[in-house]
Image 1 (tube, rainbow, N blue to C red):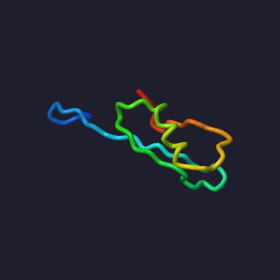
Image 2: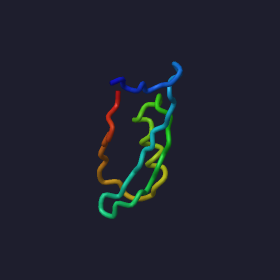
Image 3: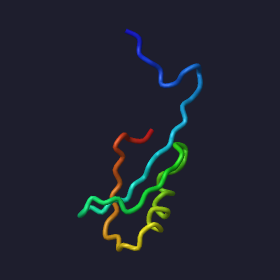
Image 4: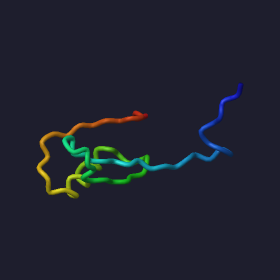
Length: 68
């Protein structure tokens, strides 16, 4: 059985990453940011923090699909 390749016709796929800030008590999304795949994830935190005036007690990182 042949496996499908991630790209077609030799062209690389381009995508985006969605970053969310979630209130852990209410599960409400309080901030969101969209970034290209080649951007550094750590650069998104200030952008997320600027979107809310809520007090931040804890910051957790989760990568559901992992990073390469």
